[in-house]
Length: 95
Image (cartoon, rainbow, N blue to C red; front, side):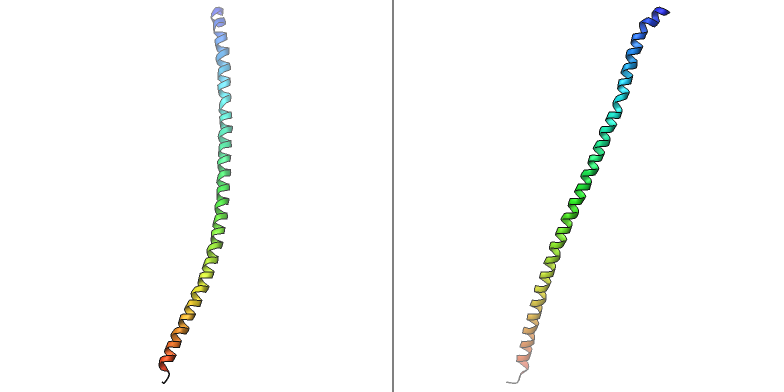
């Protein structure tokens, strides 16, 4: 019996060492996955900030365009109204 134990002791020690090494690998993989998730979150945050800035810039530009176009439209409308009023006045004056 003692002889059998001596034969199996190196095998048991080797298997125990390998098992300990294999069990130490997953936490490192967890750290890598954790880092990847943090990086992904940071990238998402940065993308959201960039989108917000672009939206703000576009809104500012479109607001300016609306304002100037509205003024142009109002002036043209007033001009055409004056022309129409002038035509009516010319038609209604006695010759």
